[in-house]
Length: 205
Image (cartoon, rainbow, N blue to C red; front, side, top):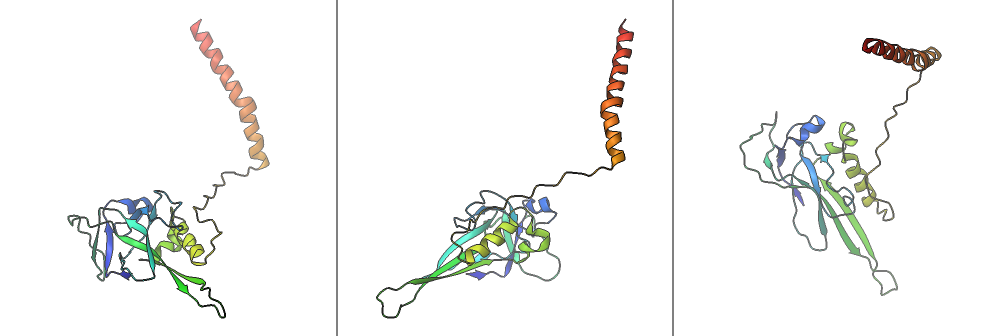
């Protein structure tokens, strides 16, 4: 697995959903792996991400986790502002995240058994997807936390999507505001309705 010396540019406009530009590819396609199995077609964003070149290595299992959209393309890494060429032909999808595992055989002393100690690694083409500004955006935090759980070999842990915190819509009123609200709901509004009905009845006579 080798990060390429290019950046993925996504011209689909998906990055605008979270106030980002084409250098923050939108991901809705996930690999078949415990880290991402509960994501469905949910959205996550990966600013300034490099595509990963996955090479087969003996005794190592590579599972792509994150794929960019088909209408994405790669351009060389340069200093300064990122210039987007809208006429460049699409080259995607690109793999920008991969899980690696290897079962190392350890010979137990005085035993014919050879228990396997698994080594794990997760590589993502950018680290900025889990920064403060993006951690709670869509599935970004779930990608990070599920990766940590899998790397910790917590096989009994549930790797899923975190429940969204309910927005606290309660508000506190002063005693004066409570009295005013009661007067409006029990006296003013009903009285206004009766007066309006009386005026309408008088006009129809």
